[in-house]
Image: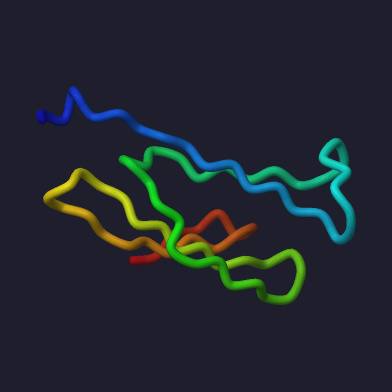
Length: 75
């Protein structure tokens, strides 16, 4: 499969202190993932989360850590 044939996915994460009132929650988007699989979510002090996502094609998968809401990504 060439790079032009890969499908990119996005994952949306909604955060709110209590309840399920999605209209007042903070919505975060993790984008440009290839065949993503959420491995682990670590709940830190609200509203901080660490999300570990495995992604890539079947021969070159890697796990990336995303810190929400800092919008930063590390190895």
